[in-house]
Length: 161
Image (cartoon, rainbow, N blue to C red):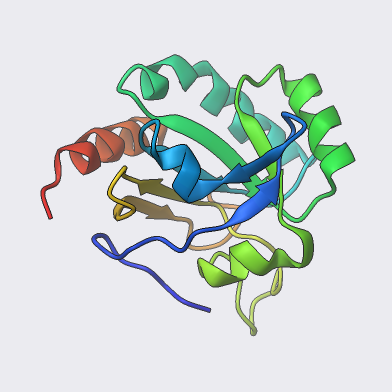
C-alpha cells in the first residue's frame, strides 16, 4: 500500500459512479481539481454523521473550484441509495475489490482492530495530476475537522510545483 505525499502524481483510476457512468480521474481533472474522499462505508452512523457535516460544507469546497467524489468498496446500488438518503450532490464511486483504496494507501493495515477497512482520507488532486493536500485519519473512527480540510484545500490550490 502506497502512502503518497503532497507533490506526488496521483494514480489514475476509472470507477463506476452514482451518476450512471464511469468516473476517470485524469479526464475529470481537465475540468478542475478533485477532492477524493475515501470513507469507511455506506449507512454507518459515524459515516452518516460525518458526511452530513461534509455536505453542509459542500458549497464552501466547490466555491473554490473543487469537485468532490466519495470512494469505498460498497456496491454501486448501495452508493445510489446512500447518496439519495444523504441528499448529496457529489458522486460516490464503487471501488470493487478495494483496488483504488489500496493503491492510495487508504486501507487500514494489519494489526488494527479494523484491518482491511477503508480509512477516512482526503486527497486533493490538481489539474496537473499532483496531490496538493492530504488529510488522513489515524483510525477510521477519527472524524475530520472540516475547517482544517477547507483551509488545506485552499492552501493546496495555491501550491506551485
